[in-house]
Image (cartoon, rainbow, N blue to C red; front, side):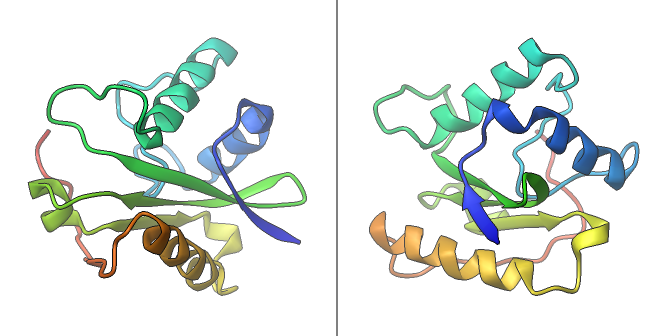
Length: 144
């Protein structure tokens, strides 16, 4: 049964398998992965997961210029199938990229997973007080 869960270090090996499936140099939307993130080691992976969880926690301070974002992983039988992100607010980046970003690993595509996850994230958006969300399709990332 598929689930939408918060990022967790428990699925390090499963996440690395999904990451490898995208191939080198590819960007996995919905995971909040930056080029500077080191995710292969347990310590690096734990630091990355902590950053993702911290971005959605209103009690934790954010770095200047960063916005809140809720990350979820699409998981089935302890296999990471994809990720989806809900960006809070209306920063310039959100206006460019949209409130929602997602990615499904190649072997799990065409199963309706993105549609399913989007429905659940829209429920989360409502609980955050977002009555409208912007969805955008972009072929390139903005400069950081």
